[in-house]
Length: 440
Image (cartoon, rainbow, N blue to C red; front, top):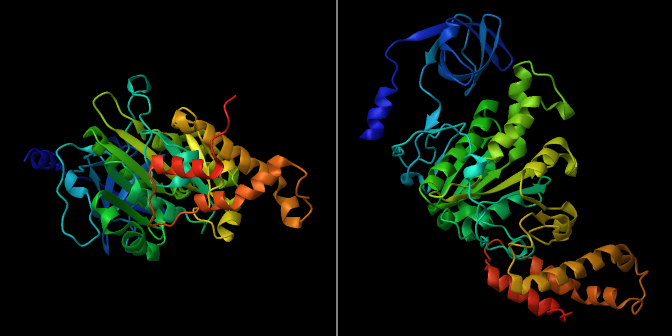
């Protein structure tokens, strides 16, 4: 009843509206009472094909510049643009678990309406103050051997998965959603292919994974504002469950498509393009979005963030990848060459880093992890010579050992999407392969 009363209170008592005076590409120019409009506020244009919700993204002279959440077909000059005084908020609740919603928080899974929660959560929320946040918590069991052992993630940590297209990011996310030991998973599919949404929900995530998840979907054909909004909504839902004292795994696929959506919005608003056409606000919005993940305050839970980055042309130093890598607490690098060899997940352990290591790893098995990394590094250094047959066995004891352990280690790093391995099981399996180094 409290939630209903607050929603009734949000209904506008006075109707304030402007008029559409121009449409330039994705941008709608609105003339009217500018005193009632502000950046981020909502408009609803009464178009010939039905209402078109918009958001004000800027001003030019005596005109407000708005971008649509829906196609602009049917909008003409002179259409009324109703100004909404209500803030851009969403009201998540526990009833959202197991549901699929769009970027505005509306159900799209055909399971009926969603029960609204009592408290409103802004789409663009601020993270807790840095000085009041807890430190990252205990290691989080992700159920994936290579991540549990070599790239241990703590509760409240933020990690990026950097990979080109078709290397297995979505499958890795589904493995995490099904196997992670967190209380709730919130999954944002930003700019996803429409064909793959049902495949992800039914084949990859499955009924078990969906039961404790909330999935936010914005497909690639939707307007840029919807794709950007889906990323904000993903974090708002995660913040609700964090405030309930739960450990949340927030996964977003992908941050790059969020940046592309922000680039479209910025260019339409007249911002100057910089590196690869990305506008300055892209690099302002990225930390504002990613910093919302992390530990909460004393009476809150945590948001562990896993964000995928679609590297352009497999270039891991392109602008978005470079910016995101500097914000997050570690990066997981997936390589096409490893995927082409048939080893999944195609993670390059030597190029990947968790910034909580080695503190987050089990100290009893830390020597084993270091030894395994050393063996893999030795093989990597000599790999070309070994493949060409130029290396002569017996020339180096370390290289001979690396060759002998290569196949067992590759088998350890390979894991099917329906297979789950706990933290301790992963450590024990790795110890059986490389042994425990002698003390001293």
